[in-house]
Length: 369
Image (cartoon, rainbow, N blue to C red; front, top):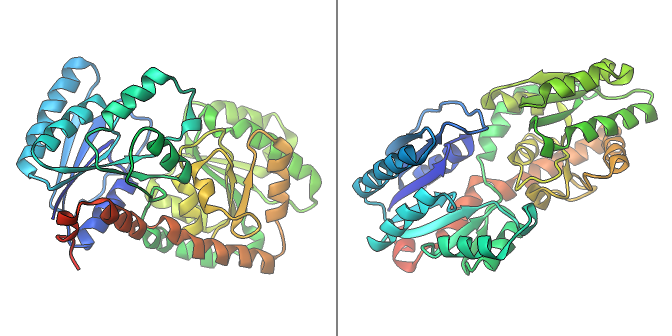
């Protein structure tokens, strides 16, 4: 079966999914709508499948139109039987989807958005429902995303939890996990340094935690973004934070598992996050997670099992969750084991099974045994 995978700014999660489809016996070609204004820093990876098409888009109507022309030409040359589109709301993708539908191609979209992410309006939601008309089904990132997709008119929906390759991540963290003593493990944040990640309040919560314990864990921040200087200033201004907080800065995606493997706990305190793949990365490494209730990845967390789900606007709740995770080693090992066991909920195997369930019978019959 010939599959085309189309997305905005091709990153490591997209690489994992294309690799999984290839290993499953599908013939895959990927299409990267490479926007110049992307906020993400992805590494260039070796694409071990049938073809990868880079379509650079500088911005502006002329560039988008030229990109659309290249995209449609290459899709027609690829002759896919299935087109997977990550970003149905991209106008160029919508036009390409209509063209592919006219040629008899089955279409599946991937959607992370939840109703609660933004203030919704009837005209915008009607427009989104129209843009979803070419699609047979949807791979939704979370239960809430599935609910929103259903609200917009899609009937065939499978939750895939933004699946990534759990084994790849666990392998990258293995050395750090085995070599880090329990007493040396720190709290970890891996995030873009932007307002919605709630990092200033997180520092306030961590400062409360420091006041409650005589032997505190360090807090390590890995990431990048426009708030980095503000966060560094906040740490320097506090005698407590300056002793215990390390702002690492930017780390390449391939090295993130090393930092997670050495952590006591991952913290994702976002005011809103459509999903939060870093939570899957933590669970894959055997590291429990404290996750905001406003993140799609909260689906993966079972409080008192593999971490905690907290209200991101409650500073004291964030602080007390840190205290609960900072426990004795035997209790933590139990959390760690539960974390590793739960990671499979967001593995690429879930992506594959969800995708197959959305296909028409004629394509399911072509799926390799």
